[in-house]
Length: 274
Image (cartoon, rainbow, N blue to C red):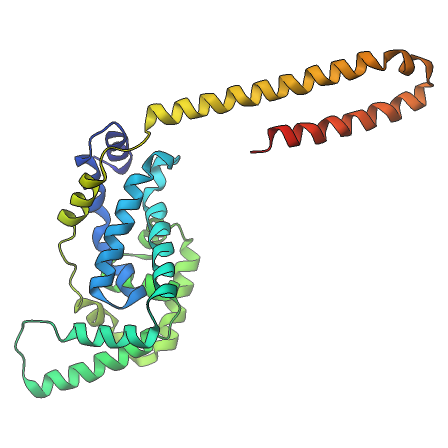
């Protein structure tokens, strides 16, 4: 099954097919959310909300091959709203530092202190990068994705992905060599069950393939009737002033026709405006 088949099946009423999309992208979505908000629990919540909104809005997705970039656009908007309303960068850095101490592995205390200091310094510098740079870093180092794969996933040109990676590495300097390990300490939680539970609780989709077709058909009918109205109005105006038009010179007729044409175009734009 590919994305398009999963989308078609979901729109046909098979909610389980949406689980395929969740399994395909949950780790990548979570990695980006974590890079943007710096807190694991918040990243999980945003990840779940992104998938839920994608499910509910799936009937509006026209390009079935663009599910991944569309999903990431939804996630970015959620993260921006979240950051503006709740999160501040300095608090986010503190949350990430706390999360780094949640591992269950026992290590040598002296080594642990050194590793923690290095990680804190690295995350402090990562926190100074812009969102788009942290996003590509999380996908490249946290998910082992190539530049071409990141571009296809996010809808960003490969040249832009390369530029963001190079800019981030340049700003991090010598610490860039520790990026792989930095994202390695943030394992991806099991999110599928929670996401699918939210999808199930949301109920059946309102609209789908049939509903979309019906809407498009209705829009076409409205447009056709609107053009018909404009045409009838134009004929009526022409008939009403035919006698006067016949009495003026050919040059003046051209002027009148040009004026009438402009008026009709203006009327058509007002009638057909969405």
